[in-house]
Image (cartoon, helix red, strand yellow):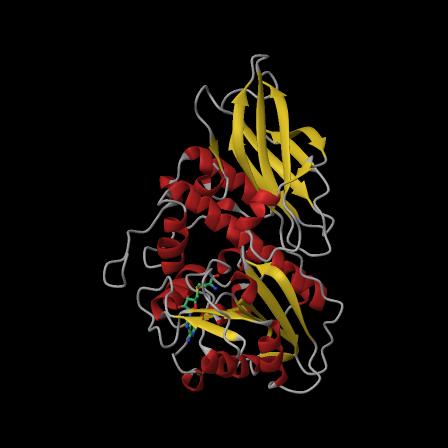
Length: 399
Ligand SMILES: C[S@@+](CC[C@H](N)C(=O)[O-])C[C@H]1O[C@@H](n2cnc3c(N)ncnc32)[C@H](O)[C@@H]1O
């Protein structure tokens, strides 16, 4: 896909019915209406068509599941900020999702807030126009140059997901100042970055604390303004210090998306020192074996990236009914290489289940409740002989 030749829109009707079942179950568990959420993915959405889809070998069904999963992870972080700073969604005034793209978060926010409370902004004006037409939210066109970005509103939450993770040094500072100015007196600015821990192998961290690499998923944004950046906490801390003295801010490792760190900065006088934003546990099925006894054995991995939290159980559901609960059996340091910079070692698990309890075609959901209060999920379909469909995050990496 390129800017001149976008992909066709992807309708959720095109997704394999097994994955659609996973998606609908997953959304309902998060209190999200699947019909409202599953609007077609616009073909110009580079985040989906140029980043998620190639990452999953152009399998539209796995990619659609991963899109939904990432939106729910975003939602978990957002809910913790809304709850921790304001006491819940019902206490919020207006919010701004800056660099919102094609509205991954808006699909969820429109189910939590009134449309007139939601502002979205992006340099892709067609993405903003599409969101305004689709969700009836307030749209603001952004610009390359922060000084040329015209918006006078003040918002309780200004979220900037995965934009600072792509900015070169000067723009990093300029956008931080410009966007902090849009935070209401009681509000917060929340933005995500790539930490130095995930700097690609062979690259060296720049002594300034920000390393800028000239590539990205975007087929249209100039590499002068949008590439891949990696930062140290010291760099971000110094950038925040330029916004004003004595501001309350916190870093939440792996707090947003699968691999980005989340920073939250309070408006002057807003103390966020007790705020916690945990990272949602991740998990995947890895193998299935039919045993001579007629039982089927499933195994997989799970990881908790919140430094102070642990996965407390594996709960197995067949077609929505819990059939097993146990604690993860072993550590899986071999999986850690897929999650550089993670605070905790992944865990392994396996379980056996009788075909009578889990007939071929049934939906298996493994749940991983964490001491953080968040839960990770992964899905599989109970196989007919020689087939196995599951929501593992990377078949390639973990086969
Ligand atoms: C990786 S995408 C993330 C999109 C969205 N936050 C999400 O989670 O799906 C980065 C977004 O930053 C936007 N962006 C880049 N430069 C921008 C600017 N100067 N003003 C506003 N948005 C910008 C891109 O257009 C793109 O939509």
